[in-house]
Image (cartoon, rainbow, N blue to C red; front, side, top):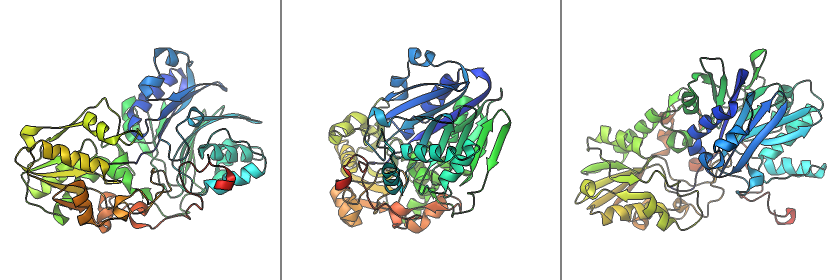
Length: 469
């Protein structure tokens, strides 16, 4: 429970003009959990770009009128944003659009560059003028610059990847092509599929392909560039194998939808396994196991399976309220609006409450109190991730250690602070069980970073004056 989220990217290419904006709308709705600050769609009508972007949820930004203003076409790219770099402003809405000598380009990005500050400073010193404070614009600048001296947009992107460091899953629109790319570590997920009528779709998660009625084809490989054009689908693999596989393990724990499959691993199955591990490593005598909606439900089911303690629904979520970490205002009031305890399920019982994480501890404390107020005799907290101890530089909105409760307190102290009778975290050494042997990044838990770390940190680093940075 706390501050973690990122973005979702989506793109389509059809053999003949269709309502690509409508297809993107469906894809973005399926990816809404990955970002609730802003969203946008850019349509490519034979080299002429049309777009609509704004702050808000997909259903708020795109009504009937906005969707109808975007023409039928063969290609489009779309994005939902939760900003890990830059403020929540209209200037930071994606996809980013660029006009350059070789035509137009639109770019949607999920992730965070670990060398964004150095790249941006070098660009500014060479005369570049930035309109946003997100590092996506830095990527767009570098690709555009490389495009001036390369024969194709995919080659320009490949050259740009030589200088980019960190996490990036990209979907890019040029006048003639839809292109996607994944960084050499494969931090963030990316996959593509095809509908029965021949429309290719690229998405952050496979659940968005399912929503479109597309058949999943495969994940984009780490370091791979995939090009969709009138000539078919081509793969460029010059960056593959240059770095060890490091998919963000928090995709499996929290970010992704349970019905998604990432790099061959079903997210739901991964979370069930996390719960089973918790029951084995942190057993407790209790009467009922409940999950914190929604990200703790699967792990709670796994805990119940392994422990034999009955699974129940002890907390109900108001599905019309956004995630608590999105809004910067009073969290205490938000928790009461967002969650309610079911007294008949928990009153007089020893309750195991399973959740995905504790960041600040504020939300966990409120939820434990909700259960106490509903008559729970004991509340035992189990977390399906290790303690957050380090900042993330790859797309999770944890950019410093000052707000992390686990950096300042022991496990027993945290249990006392949140009002729980006991507290148990997933052991760090068990994380590999969640990814079925795939390489993963656990830097936010272990402090072992796969890349160099930024010299200048903070979500607002591009909004400060250079002298302050």
